Image (cartoon, rainbow, N blue to C red; front, side, top):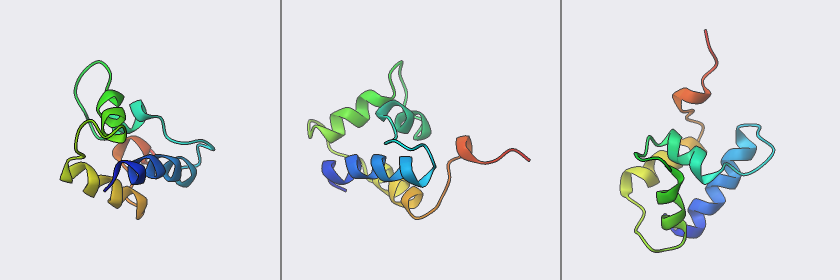
Length: 77
């Protein structure tokens, strides 16, 4: 996954999940369970090409684009 594809994926996920806006970097960071006070920081670094996008992140984002929903978005039963 390229940095541009990750940026586009945030936009697509926002639409796919009915937010009416792109998913914020911090939201994606929390969904991916990234550590730290600002989980969106790594997302922004990946999109700015300062750090490579890890394979597991790429896989998770691809799965979400194909319909997998993270536990935070699952409807309560």
